[in-house]
Length: 328
Image (cartoon, rainbow, N blue to C red):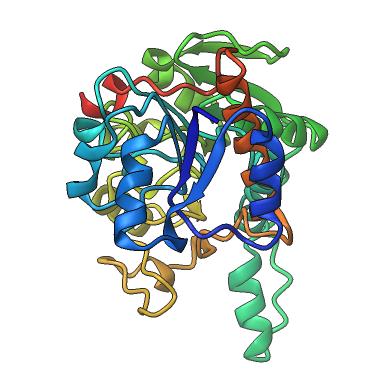
């Protein structure tokens, strides 16, 4: 076959077969990690398509990018592409991410974090462990309140569905101001300041780009209700870390639920945030595991491989990334 798909990551069990099934009859496949240095170099030079994980350290050395002379399409397994080496991509190569594949598990994680904050679950649990049976009325209802969703792609839509089921009104902002689904109010991102004061819960589920980095700073935190709940399942750096910490200390009724962090270690290193968020009673936290459900890696690899098939068949791929969003 004339076309070649180069796979730069080690696929999980069953994923090799899924990749081969999607490319069958359209392209040969080279799993780069299986190859000798010489064979890898030859495959890189021949590759029309690169199937990457999420550009983790060492996945593709910087020195190797210049050898992708035929590369026309890059597909990632995962959603976030803020690590993508945009300046090194060959001219004319299209990059697509795997947006929306984690909508169901992450929307459930949003509900976990929002409810943990609304019900003050963790502080009450700690009191019970210490022998205190405190029945003081600190619970809050989501029902009847307003949920503001920042970013209304697959995750945002799934969050809206669940928050609506809890009886919340839905407000949303995104780039276009169009949601494609009925909500109580929608606007473009430049209307975020208008939305924030109206919301009891604010959910961040947009990608980290040049324009979204530091989107929620001290000024915007001050626009929110004193007892608002901010939930972040996008990226830690959507929020200014220092501003958030000081706001949480100064506003004990304000709550933060996070599945994403500013500096996330790998499994071999300890977690040590710059500010002691986990010592605060108004923080509910999980270790960026909202998308970690059984079988998910095989599922998302298969979905991404289908997009490669679309490209190989001459159809427009979905979830194409605009590089200028990330390079400023």
